[in-house]
Length: 213
Ligand SMILES: [Mg+2]
Image 1 (cartoon, protein in one colour):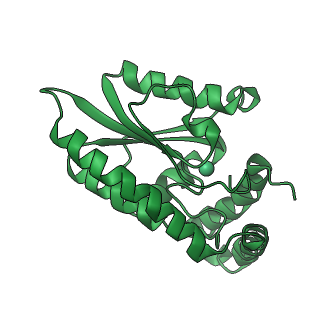
Image 2 (cartoon, rainbow, N blue to C red):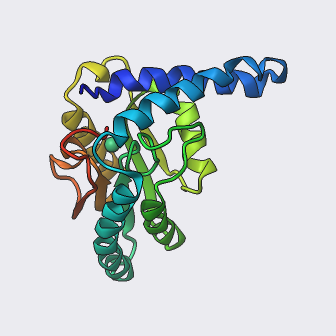
């Protein structure tokens, strides 16, 4: 089974673009409905091969159950004037991408709970994703629509697409720090989300050996 998230996101792009077109032109709404449906079928079939949705949610909850007590303490201990931030991956971290894809994609509930605690306590949320910049606006809309407060969204531009993913993501965390933020946690589901430092703590959600983007 090959699961190239970038290629699969081309499918997402087509679906998301169709939805955007439908929103802008109500008369065209009937036509693009087929695109999200076929994307759903492909994504669900691939993800369901080895791990079911309930298991995935349970595994995500277990990781967030470790993150939340740390974050509560770290947020309460903020130094005077410290600007705290959390960096999140998007696909299969903040949003349910592989399980029942739709647009807008639902939030990954265990992660949204933690994000809401943080944003309600003054922590800035930054999203660093391998998604290409052509779907930046639909991604930004999706995150806000499901309840995330987005302080910054970093997507890959054309040149970034040829860069190592981990290197790209690390560089963006360095940029966030350069804006004066202290990254108290970096939360993702792939090793490439989390390597490279520039975060006080990392929390790894499941990718089931690379099956989830
Ligand atoms: Mg991911």
